[in-house]
Length: 152
Ligand SMILES: [Zn+2]
Image (cartoon, rainbow, N blue to C red; front, side, top):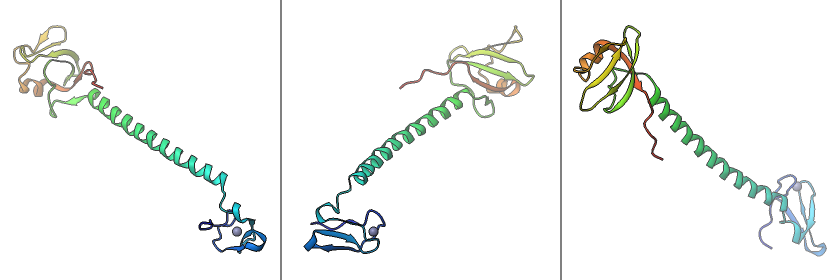
């Protein structure tokens, strides 16, 4: 027989063998079993197998949580109000802006036609809208109006 497993009851490792009466017993707690049965641990084996399955499943879920956290952070970044002092929008995006006077307006940040923005139903920054100086003088924050399409 191969190496004897520790006692399933007390964990003792001093296992004695009495071949004459076909018996193994634990020297610590006197648990005993036939020699051919001592290393048989069906419940323990099933539990170990189940532990491996659960650990594996847990790792998959942990990865999923990390992926979701990354996605949430990505979406929060795209939806937050961005200070003009930090950066301006990318071209060809619909944006919403907050002026220093508190007015909120929508506009489109064109690459070729400059920024077109309506403020108080009539004031436009159309010719100079792409001039960062205009943004820094008048606008405090901006954010994308629609989130860009997500490539999966
Ligand atoms: Zn024992």
